[in-house]
Each structure stands twice: as structure tokens, then as C-alpha cells.
Length: 198
Image (cartoon, rainbow, N blue to C red; front, top):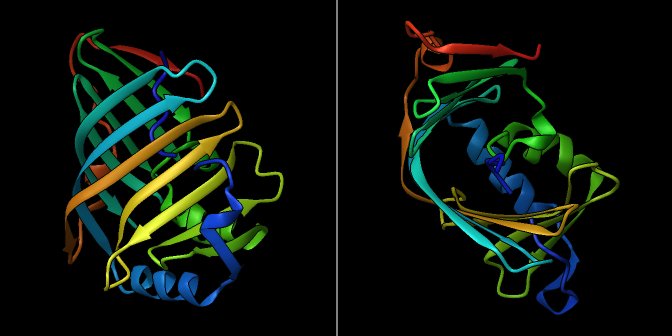
């Protein structure tokens, strides 16, 4: 099963009230002040169609420009903002693609700007989350950000067009002064099969 890393759920009107851009601007301002961060994450995905679930735990390092490195189980997913490498140590294979920011869960730059600019924006009734309902996104029908008192994102819930919910919790978030860009480029290992779809 191809793992989608990142995530939005079906709109329930009773959770939301008026359109709100102030919360979005506060979250954007926080992320504009950050160069990079690291965190532990847990992801739970559940199909609304058949009820099946799967769980993933790992670590992430994220840098502006949609640069990230995810490590979980036997996998590493690395992006330099243009190319994405999916390395599976169990299969001894790396699959290379051009980054499709709309179809990747950890493309925060796209979610906070590209998607937000073409979405209806709401705040949950208890003001603990920001909800985006995109207009013809092509991948997701809804995205919800939970945040702390300092406007750091602590949880993301995505629902894709197949009605699969992705619930991602970020724990032990650490702001990093800077991370060298070389961390976001996959270096192939001897004997690893390369499948390049670029």
C-alpha cells in the first residue's frame, strides 16, 4: 500500500463559525519566523469507506521551501523541494519522483499559502484549530491545523478525495536555527535499486 505522508476531514458545520483569516495570519507569521524544525510524529489513517486503519510513527526535520526528511519504520522520505526520494530498506530500493506538493502531507509551505489562498477558512468553535475547505484542490477535500499558544502546529488532519482521513500529531517540536540543505538530498547506497520516474 502506497503511503501518503500527510493529511483533512469531512466538513461538519457545527464545529465551525465565521470565516477567519486572523488565525491563519498568526500561524503564517510564526512559520515565517522559523527556518526549520524537528519533531516526532504519529500518523493514523482511516478509510471512511471500509473503516481500515494504519499507523506510522517516526521523526521529521522540516525546512522552508518544502524541504523535509521523514524517517519511519523501514522508510526514509526525503525532499529538497523539487525532487522526492522514497527509500525502503526492506526492499533495498529508492523511488525518485518530482515533488508534487499537493499530494504530500508535509508540504506546509503549500498548505499555508497555495492551498489557503484558494480555500474557505474557518476556526473551530473552541478556537483550537484552523479549518480549510479548498475549492477544487484535486487531492484534499479538507485540512485542519491544531496549534498551541505560540501558534506552532501540533496536529494536522487531512481528508483526501477518496474519503481517507490522515491524522498527524507532532510531538517534541524543536525550532532549529538552520539545517544544511545536504540533509534533504538522498545519497544512494551501494546495491540499492533506483527507480526514477522523473
